[in-house]
Image (cartoon, rainbow, N blue to C red; front, side, top):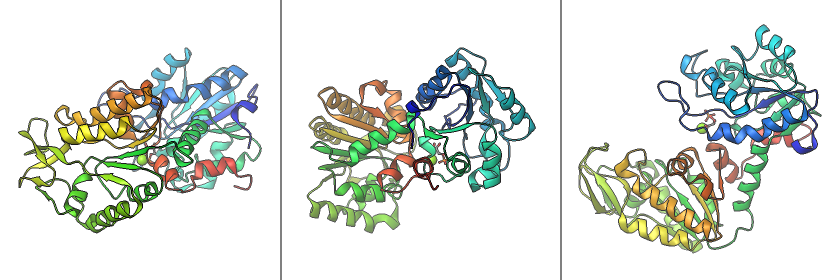
Length: 399
Ligand code: 3PG
Ligand code: MG
């Protein structure tokens, strides 16, 4: 496999799969442009070589055909500003218009294709669809790490039409390098912070991490399944009843392996799932009936911050509470603060997952941690030890 730095794009049309699946508000404004900013160096390298860029991406999960709210045309202005040029837009990623526009594209120009998922063939990994996309460019660049766990037409299947001309972009390379840092011989103490709503999304990664980490800090909605498994009264907090046995098993596993598994001792509780609800603090094991835990509490905050500040390697995935609501964002912010402090003192910190990355951006800390991943599911699957089709398609000659 060649790296993007070894490839000369002069005179070539590069078909670049990016992950521009960015959040848009009701007026179609981009509310977090991390994934766009991340892709800039790859695009710039191609342009600087004297190549032309054809960008392809998905946006959201459209059900059946085109939908206004999932149109990539909402990104055209943002991209045009970024590259100081008028970014061209094809209203369909395949078909005569896209073919003509790609054909006419000149070195230094950028063409953005409409949402790949407006065609069901994309997610099906349809070979004919991949082949038609492939006719648009001379070289395939995959820089969509966030979508690398999908075996779709544009993320994997298409690579077979570019046996000699396929490379990873800078995002992909950097993501893999950073993920490998926390998978390999990480410096200790090594702390993983796992949050988010559901244990079910995190089981495999938590099991894997048990063999690596010294501390495993649990937060977010999934805390309460652990609390209940530990015999606590959790009121009407979120719980996955069918995962209680699993939580018990994870608690026992941590004990056997000598991992310091921490469940928040206290919580910020509310009498409704609303920022305007009545709020209180409570021991997580003694939450009143009808009240629910929506953030880690003040003691847990201090304990977690303490562990984090004493760590040398930190992996953080998932918020500590409902951080979108200001009354329940304190725990996530306290953890973010501690991660920033530890990083300043020399620790390596990797922030993964859409929500924790959004939280770090919200608090303005993106530049104060070691690396913010653009991947959610993709990073987790990579860390679970799974092969990412988007990576294999580039790395393997026989793909
Ligand atoms: C993501 O945001 O998770 C990636 O863009 C992949 O999207 P998907 O989960 O809809 O496949
Ligand atoms: Mg996803």
